[in-house]
Each structure stands twice: as C-alpha cells, then as structure tokens.
Length: 340
Image (cartoon, rainbow, N blue to C red):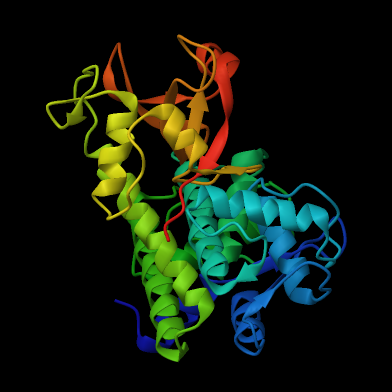
C-alpha cells in the first residue's frame, strides 16, 4: 500500500483538470479544487451564462475532452458552453439548467475519470520505443491526469513516457515493465473511485440545504423512477393492461409513475393533454408517437442516449432507440410530467 503522503498526492492528482493555453504544448492545472471553491463562494452556488473566468475555461476543456463541446476554449460562458452543459446534464440525469453547479462538476469529475481509465484500458500490448499512435497519446494523457507524466503530449513512446509508466508502477509496488498491466489499471481505478468518494463526501459535509440540493434530490428520484421502469423489462404486452401481468403503453407509464406517488391519466391522449411540452427532453420525460391513428397513440419514458422504454405489442416492455426509422418517422414530441 502507499504511504499516506503518496496516497494524498494520487488523490489530488486524480481530480486534476486540464486546459490548453497554447499549441502544441498542453499545460495542466489542479482545477477541480478551484472550481469547487469558486462555486462554494458564490451566493447561489453556480456559474452561469455571461460569466468569464478560468473556471469556465477549464470546464470548456473538460467538456471538449468528453465530446460535448467543440468550440473555442476562451473562458466565456456563452451559448455554446450553456448548450454543452445542458447536453451533459441531460445525459447524466441532472436538472438541465445549463449552469455549472456542484452536482454537474462532480459528474464531470466521474466522467473524466472514466474517460482516462478507458484510455489506459486500450493499451494491452508491450510498448516499444518509437511507437507513435493515438493509444500512446491516450496513455500519456492518463498518466498525466494521475500525476506521473509531465512532458509534452505527443503520442510517441519514448524515455519520458516509459519513466512515467515506471513511476506509476513503483508507486504501487508493481513490477516495472513496458506493459501496462491489468494490476496497474485496476489499482488506478481504485484510487480514482476513492478520490471521487472523498470529494463527494467533503462537499456534502460543507453544504447547507439549498434550492440546489432540492434539485439534486429530484434527480435522484428520477433515477429511482427509471429503475422502476427497467424492473418491468420483459413484462408481456396486454391491451388495456395495467399490472405486471401485462401492460399496454399507457398502463405501463401510469404504473411506473404511480410507484413514486405521481398520478397521471390512463390514456395516451389524456397524458398528452395534461403534461407540459419541452423543447429539449430530459431523462424521465415522456416521448409520444402517432402510430395506428391520428394524434398521440403510443408513448414511452426517455432514458437518455436516444433510448426510451415502453410497452410494445411485439416485445412487451422493452427499450428502443428514437433513431430507429419506425419511431423517428412517427415521433410527435416530448412532454414532462408535473411532480407537484
């Protein structure tokens, strides 16, 4: 095991944020503490549209790494930054308000760690000096993220990359090799999980109940609703069905929401008329389709990532993609259930 001082350093480095100041060299900063402190010092605990700060620049870079933001990294919180944040929030079951709040920062930390761990897992062969490819670049980025690589990110396996790999192996008393071993990947994964937990618990301990924390509890409840829906996967279709013995599409949706003390009407058209239209759907919103008759005649619950869960005649409760030609051509829109 690592000594405490070594462990603290790994924890610190594993929540490191990076941003590009100039090309071709990439500079890194320990920016997550900066972001957290900035948020906690704000009266309403968020950074929003119109702000200009180093924290915005950092988050733009992170969203770029995670393929949510592809515009200029300039520190200006404009339309493109707001849109990227909303897209990230929607796909991570966070209230999509387009602000940089603590819940969103923590989700980005977790997503970034997952991103870098995938970069490491892509290397499963012995490395040789002079190799140059995207996987080597991913290895350099990941080792830099965890605090071992300090040179230029160039995608070339040379002495500095090998030294960084050996330093990581030494830190965990693992054999020094030119192979990225499964043991090292698993150990770094454990340290990443530890740092995320440590950061999350510290934030909770320092927070007073606020309107933002109420929003967070709503996101947690939505996760529970989705779990309830997925628990019915495989239940057969039954016309007029409202129980786990068999569902029709509206009976399924009504049943899931009722499990969370939310009452909605029985028929598709009634649900359509008593829910609120949304321009940008979020996880838990309802998606409607025109199938066998004019107007809304089928619906499901949006899961994110272009998927929705519904009770269909062919397969019962199942998950489908909105991009499938059948559903795409019949899609009417998304609407939101009021939880009041």
